[in-house]
Amino acid sequence: MRVLVVEDERRLAAGLRSGLEAEGFAVDVALDGTDGLWMAREFPYDVIVLDIMLPGVDGYEICATLRAERVWTPILMLTAKEGEWDEVEGLDNGADDYLTKPFSYAVLVARLRALLRRGAKPRPAILEAGDLRLDPAARRAWRGGVEIELTPRELALLEFLLRRRGEVVAKREILAHVWDYDFEGDPNIVEVYVRHLRNKLDRPFGRAAIETVRGAGYRLAANGG
Image (cartoon, rainbow, N blue to C red; front, side, top):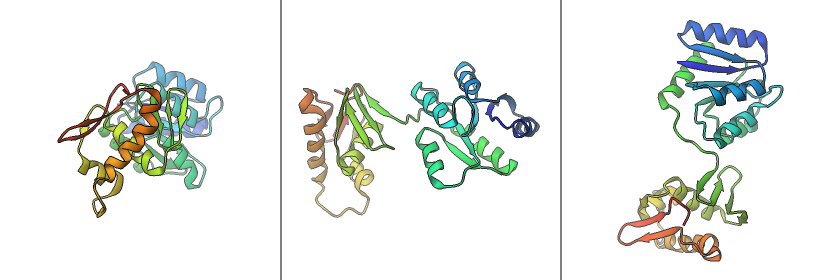
């Protein structure tokens, strides 16, 4: 398996190369963010080990750029920082996993193998259907260039529909994922919130993205309506 290591600490980069090669990986190394981003774009890696604090382009920007360009190579981020918000920022920018320095090589290899098993599946940071967009991390939604103000529950419903865009989802599935399995209120609450979304995302723009499929549930048009 081919691995790209983007790490500006030369000794650590060399250690990562020798350690991963000893485990049977083919390893390329970039010593700054600019080269790392170029290599990640140009070559078909199976997994990327990405430091956060890099000269040129930092790890957050590399990760966000690759995901925006639909490069879905699994990314494991390395950081010398402590604190949960650094981890949150990395994961929200599209990373798949992270390790804090110093780390165990055995744990690094195990996590890389776990990422390889998952493969390069699409995991966009921004969910889209036509000109309808949602940033789940920032909790913001847009129709074209217009930002739409949504409540937390409306955002959760839109996120679920976008992740299943083009598919029919039953009311019970929506209740289970947007509310919870133990919800004991009126199941018609789904219809209420679907109406809220239509009033905010569709009708003002002359669209009909959220379709009612009689006897089955709802479907968000893959093209955004």
